[in-house]
Image (cartoon, rainbow, N blue to C red):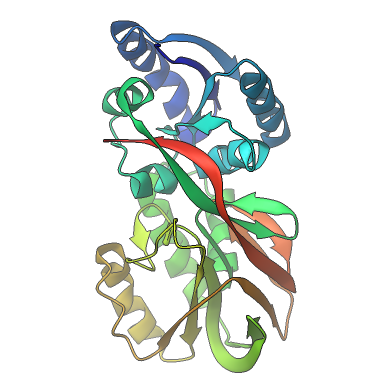
Length: 291
């Protein structure tokens, strides 16, 4: 039986990119015989309501926007038999990338018709769902800058934000507990990863699995800013993992805090003020991915 879909569109995502891609997406769905309807969001909360409506109608939820919109839809669908197929429409599109869905909107739209279902893990931070990476510290400052910036830089917005944040950065002292094991360190950030990808293609944990029931934790210790900066391009390739300033851990529950206030960001949006506890919810979300 052909699938039916609800396109949940953020008209302002990516500077209007999602809205501009909509006619091409609709054309592909018609070619594949997929019945669909289009709903435009007013907020992330509204997106969740639209996803619940699509769930009741047994439609595939297809968020067309950025990672924040995708995370909001995932929150509404987690733990249900609803199915999501995210399409690229924002600046980062990291969850789309992790699923192996094309960054080309027309190729991506075909997955609604031809894709196969997978059950993937989600992360829960204080009752809120995220799909990518929750991080705080220098990353918090970077996100603050990127959200305020109106310069049309696309995925490079995160590189721009890092350069500006690093100039004013002072190290923080962190305390974290991973599955009951407590430790402290001085450094740049703590990141708790589900998909392992964030920041418009930065592969912080290249081998992260969304189907292993585990979170990947990355601690970035203090060091010269020039070394931090020189390692940044390697993160896009995933070749940074041998950097001695990085510590990689895994666990099912992670709590962390710092010696000064930070906002943890995930999927491009603020998700919690520190301290925060993150837990993995195994296999909680059904998605469509390429065969």
